Image (cartoon, rainbow, N blue to C red):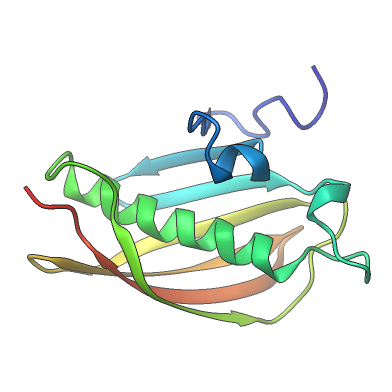
Amino acid sequence: MNEFSQAPEAGFTLMEQGGTFMDHVGPVWSRADADGAVVLLRIGPQHTNPNASVHGGVLMTLIDVALGSALQAAMQGQGAGHPVTMQLSCSMVGAARLGDLVRAEARVDRLARSVGFSSGRIEAGGRLVMTASAVFKLPSS
């Protein structure tokens, strides 16, 4: 086992999605409850760009997962399936580097009948890297 395959913090579980895209990004670790969601990723060489910082697409993927996970946790099992991203707005305000533990935190801003609104941020080493907000189509009951 190496530093990328062990839970970086207590209380987190490995997100395993049966060979889907997220399995290629990770290992990604998550924790979600009624207050929101947190997603963790230790940055490896495969996550970086030619500038030796994390590729923006990796960060957008992590925040998208965290925002949707927060909504899903708030729904407490209502509806079948996962929330589907309708709109994602991100502002990249810093950089994460190789070896950083990137932490995406999300909260629910509003749940309506068929859509949900969430917002969050990504930090790396205590530095703000990204802020984001999103609108999701919620799964049907």
